[in-house]
Amino acid sequence: MYEIAFNILSIIIKNPREENIMPVKTLDLSNFNHNNKHKAIFSAFDNLDLGEQMLLIDNSDPSMLFNHLDDEIGTKLDWKYLEEGPDQWKVAVEKRYLSFI
Image: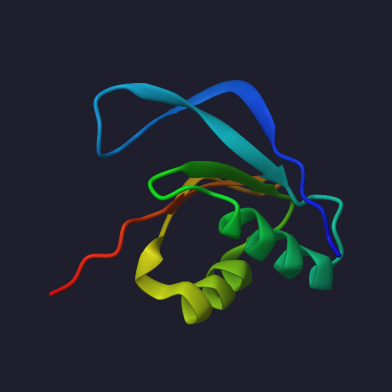
C-alpha cells in the first residue's frame, strides 16, 4: 500500500472560484519513479475533499499524469499549470463538484 503524506506550505494559491486565498496541500513527485507517480497522484486526488486543491510539483512535464487522471476521473478534475519548466513544473489540481447537464 502506498501512503502519501501532504505538507501544508506557506505558499498560497488564489482559488479561481472565490476571492479569498487558501493554503494548499502539496505533492512533490520529483523523486518518484514513473510507476509510483501515477499511484501517488491517484491516492492524493482521492484524499482531496470536493472543492479542495493541491499543488503538484514535478521535475518533468506531468502532462501524462493529467491524461491518465482525465481518462479515469474526467470532469471531477481541474488542472492548471502555474509553472512550466524547464527544471520544475507546478500544477494546481482541484477536485471539482460534478455538474449535471
